[in-house]
Length: 96
Image (cartoon, rainbow, N blue to C red; front, side, top):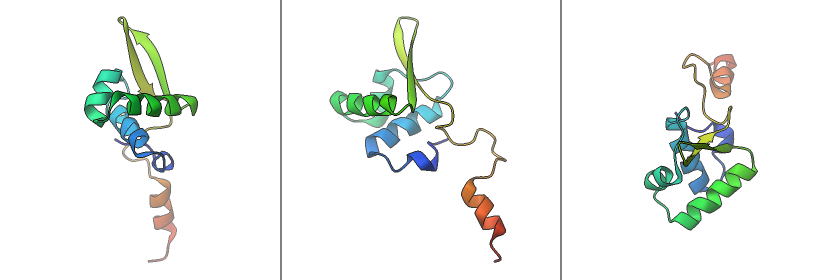
């Protein structure tokens, strides 16, 4: 699972964070888990997280004395594999 196409034109690190969170959207990830997946220095990761939080694309909450970051609803691609994307819907309507 990945971030939806409308969020893929962001900074490369921000997209990598969203994609990492998409894989664990239910349980979320700590900053340290994200850092191991995104493989950037902590300052770059913190800047990306701040921008994503400011834009309402991620949420952070306390869980068992640690901060867990999850993507906001609607940021991750369709949960239903039968749910057609906009591109798929357009392709179906083209006369090829």
